[in-house]
Amino acid sequence: MAHAMQDDEVAAFLDQLPARTGKLASVRDDGRPHIAPVWFALDRSTAGPDSPAGDLVFNTAAATVKGRNITRDPRLALCVDDDTPPFTFVIVEGTATVSEDPDELLHWATVIGGRYMGAERAAAYGRRNGVPGELVVRLRPTRIIASAAVAD
Image (cartoon, rainbow, N blue to C red; front, top):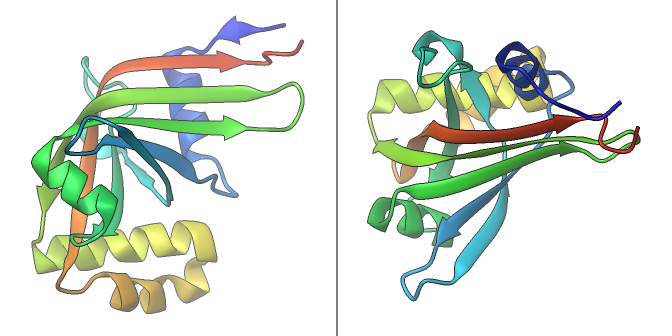
């Protein structure tokens, strides 16, 4: 039966393997929305009363549309869904912080690469994506809308 997801269900869904891509919405300089798929990881170490699951972390090149949008306007929304019946989704709205710290970049690029490509390829993806010109983006949730078993 369809139900609003509790905090632990949201965290488990976002952290589930195989990993699902997120669909990230950012704001263009003229106010139009921009949507792009992203690989992400959940940083449970940042979990707290305001963010029960923690921050969602992803990498992007600073020169991309989303990279430029995020550095100009940190308001973001990310949708992660299971598009098989009975259908589940989590929408995270929040604000982003950006880092270019080389150690943080390599760490998160490796974690995220391993999440999507497997542990055996994590280091290669970390080296590929944890480079100058890339950003570590942390989406701190301010609102989460989550529903499971929508079609039940």
